[in-house]
Length: 112
Length: 112
Image (cartoon, rainbow over all chains, first blue to last red; front, side, top):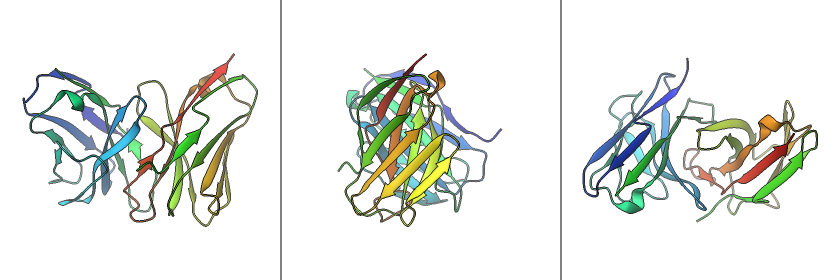
C-alpha cells in the first residue's frame, strides 16, 4: 500500500531531550515536507525537501532540523525540545509532476 | 504570513444539502489545492486547480478559482454525514511549488 509512515504516533518527552520523528514513504516521491498543526493556527510548514540532500526552510523552521540522505526518508530532529513545540506533526510527500501531497497519520508530541 | 484563509470557519448543514467553502489568498500562485482532514488524522488531497484554470470538477466536488480576486470556492453537492471534516485550502505562493501554505480551515458538520 502506498503510504507515508511516521513514527512514533504519540510521544511525551521532557524539555531539552533530543528526539527524532521518523518519516518514510514507499512511493519513490521526490518531494517531502514537514508541518505542525496547532489549534487556531492551522498547518504551518517547517521544512521541505525537493530531493536527496536538497532541503529548504518553511515558515517555522526555528528549533528543528531535517536531513534527506535517502529518497524515502525525511526525519525531523528536535535537538533541544521546548514546550512550545508541543504540537501535532505531519509528514507529507509528492511525486514529480503531481502537486497533491500524501500525508502521514501524524505524530502527537508533548514536551513537558 | 497567512496565504490562504477559509470562510466560514464553521459550517453546519443537513444531509443532502450543498456546502460551499471559500478561500482567499494574498499573492500570486501556481496552483491551489483543497484537502480534507477527519478529526486528528492526516490530510487527504481532494483536488488541485491550476492558476490558468477557472473551474474543476471531481465527483461531488466543484472548485472555482478567480485569480483576479485571489479567491477560490469548494462546493460539495448532496452532502453526506461522511463529509463531516475540516477542509483546508493550500497555495504555493507562486515562488516554489513546495513552499505550500495552508489556511486555517473550515469545519464542516453534516447532520444526518
